[in-house]
Amino acid sequence: MTQQVFYDAPMRRALELSERGQVTGGNPQVGCVLLDDTGRIVAEGWHRGAGTPHAEVDALSHLTDARGLTAVVTLEPCNHTGRTGPCSEALIAAGITRVVYAVSDPGRESAGGAERLRAAGVEVIPGVLATDVEQLLHIWLTAVARRRPWVTVKWASTLDGRAAASDGTSQWITGTAARQRVHEQRAASDAILVGTGTVYADDPQLTVRGDAGELLRHQHQPVPVVVGERPLPADAALRRHPAGVIETGTRDLGRVLADLDARGIRRVYVEGGPTLASAVVAAGLADEYAIYLAPALLGGEKLAIGDLGIRTIADARRLHIVSVEQLGEDLLVIARPTRT
Ligand code: AOF
Ligand code: ZN
Image 1 (cartoon, rainbow, N blue to C red):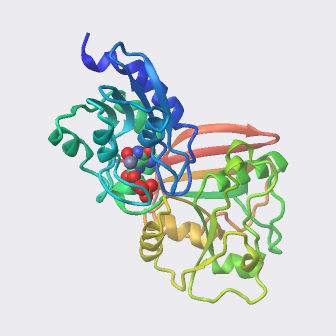
Image 2 (cartoon, helix red, strand yellow):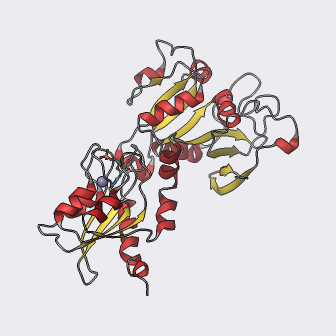
Image 3 (cartoon, rainbow, N blue to C red):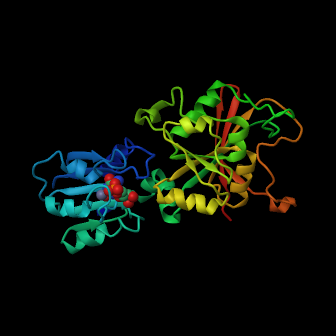
């Protein structure tokens, strides 16, 4: 039996604890357990969300004496002073003698914890249950490594892909169960992107409403981000949004996403109209699609997504289906680009 396998069970517990933390707010979900020399868990901790203690510090806070213990943590302990202090130093100061972790911290400032611990004489075992933890943190890890948020493009359409009738009316295509699911997806996002065209046409509120399930326990409202040069109308509903509103003043999506990254925004939900959707897709910035399909037909011209500049079938953007969920009469299809 390798050492790695020995730490599988406590790491699974740390992973379970990590899932209690907030998915939004910029920080990863992290869990930690402390083991005595018989392998028994003597303390547990997890990170609630940005601005609160890290998992390791939370676990240590339950003990008066942690000397000689092993820390099993889902992410490499951080080595920086952000909103809180470095976990590497907290573990060293507490007298922890071994640190087992799953995945490395991809953060440019926070990385280096493993090295620091080793330099202080702490035994470090990386990579335990790395695949499982990477799966849970996939969006966060991708966003941090790329220095731009993960982008989910959402639309609701009829089975023939239409989003509005020829007179422009578009409410409501899908039923209540699907609309509720949209609120859950908003609640799991840091920001909602909308184009100025949609703001002028629909005057949306873009708030999380209703029973957005588990995610609403954090009372989280993603911030609306208006993409485009035109200023927000003085009486726009978005001006009353509880999280405020970000007016970008530009259509340059690269700049918009870089600015959101700098604000710690990791998950963006693109809800704002066919022009914005096609711009995001054509720029190769869509990481995921959330497509709501209602059992109706509209025919005509008004597609859920605008022109992608694709002139021949060989250039079609190929996706793979991640999941299909039935919500009342409607379907929710989650798809991601096929990586070639
Ligand atoms: C850990 N344990 O539980 C978490 C870590 O601004 P701060 O101080 O909250 O730091 C946030 C960064 O710290 C975050 O981007 C990530 O690199 C790391 N998160 N590290 O050792 C934890 N949540
Ligand atoms: Zn930390």
